[in-house]
Length: 91
Image (cartoon, rainbow, N blue to C red):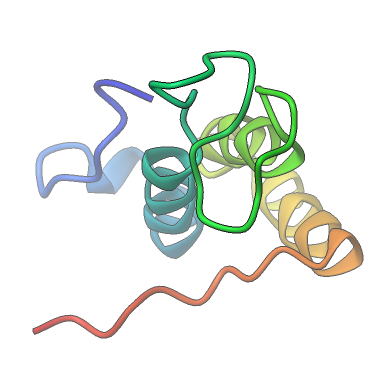
């Protein structure tokens, strides 16, 4: 998800900034493995890449910039799939 980071300059275009941040965080963790590019590198995932979470992250990044309905649907899809959207605490 290169170039999808949430910044103060593009935050106003976001319908759901928290969903965009969660999508960026998930996309950064679920990348192809260096040892086996056909597998996800996230600890405990190891699904074929793109894994469920990587695909969700891509969809959520788009939904966060679309309509409120799209963002809400993406959030419900995450809950249904068991994908945790809670971000680590900011320091």
